[in-house]
Length: 148
Image (cartoon, rainbow, N blue to C red; front, side, top):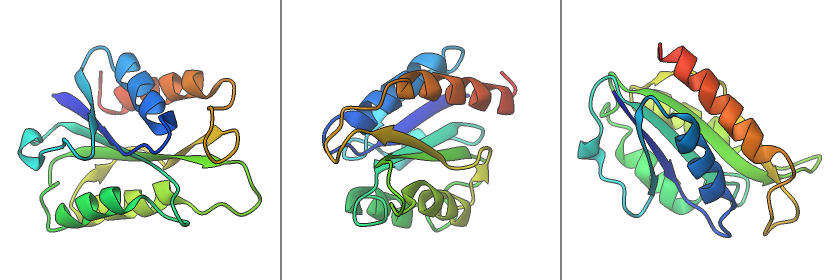
């Protein structure tokens, strides 16, 4: 089993969260991969796919949406998956992680965690204090859920 953390990042915040998740997925062969470098054949049955995106116009970025649409034809059967987003803490902010989770499910993935949000200060960041620790804790929970 390996883990791929696929992300899009406008200002580097989502990339930082993806890298913190990879670091905490130690027992797996984990790798952070930019959405522009991801290749679907890299996934195999039993692998873990984590997808991350900043909220962009109330939803995931167009590149992440395009990727998930391409995987929506059942290519994710047998893959375990989870999604996260980075967002500003506002009363109304959208929920990209929830939309990505639904797309992963449509693609046939087994969803192993509720969507997760990580918070940034302002639209460009940086990440709020403690968010990278929160990412590591979430990744540790993902490990438990895949039996590692």
